[in-house]
Amino acid sequence: MYSSDMKRLIIRLIKFMLYFIAFFSLINLLYLVVIINTDWDFRKRMESINFENPDFGLLVLGASTALDGIDTQYLTSKGIKSYNLALGGSTTKTNYYQLKDYIVRYNTKPDYIIFGTNTGMGAPLDDPDIHPIVDFTMKEQRLTIDDFPIMKFKWLGFEFLKKVVSGKHRKAELIFGQLKFEKVISDETEYRDNHIDKSEMQSSYWLSEIARLCSDSSIVFMIIEMPGYHEMQNMDEVGPENIELKNGSLTAYYNFNSREFCKSLNDDNDWIGNSHLNRFGAKKFTAAIYEHIFGGYN
Image 1 (cartoon, rainbow, N blue to C red):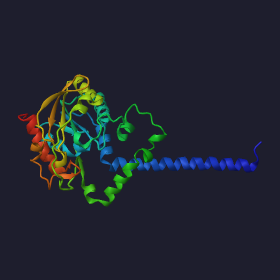
Image 2 (cartoon, rainbow, N blue to C red):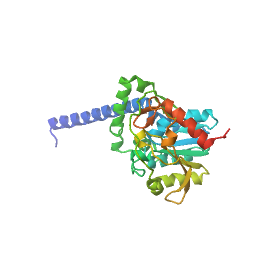
Image 3 (cartoon, rainbow, N blue to C red):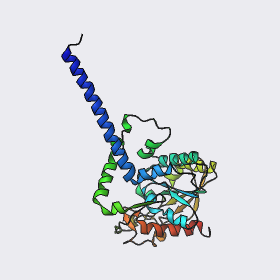
Image 4 (cartoon, rainbow, N blue to C red):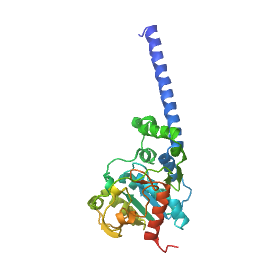
């Protein structure tokens, strides 16, 4: 039999655990509410899975260079209703699940998918991870202890602090899924004699799976090389050219990181930093690719 002192100790421990669980749950709930309402990627993800009968004719996939650099508001103004699904730090596997989720969730399928990549930045196309925000919000996701928001999204706390202290971060706008930033950092890098190596794209499993999803839904799939700083630009032609992916899909590829093409961008006004376009550069770039890809659309 337990002594009365032992019983009191057990009751206190149980109460402490219940208080701790309640407090920890409350902190996680508050943290989740804050990041859902302040983080651009989280807000976009929640918006994109809660559309009411969307009728977008074009979707953008990719990571941060596509998120910042493809102005879907501009494309919409030109008659191609568009939405930018790209997320900062996204993997190609993540893009596949985003597109699959969109196709399953909504009846109206887009006519075009643009996948924005930047081979010069070195991120592996077949990274096995799924972006934590997409992973957390997928329908089939079974949440575990590792999915507590304060642990799963700890880096978003630092992003929130940036918005607290930086006026330019607070002024950034999310419009048609594109992140519009007014911050300007000049490109002061030097040109190099770069050439594109397309072998990783051609052997990418997840890129070929995106192409397969598009083919199955009669969607035109295009891969575009996003522009970068001088040191990232290449000496190859813009194209387009057809490249064959891992599963045999033939896909149009546009090299918009060509040094010749990038001459239209202003070194002092059009960049946020680290080969990412600000809102001014993004509009200029998108106008150029609109003419190159969709000239005569209207």
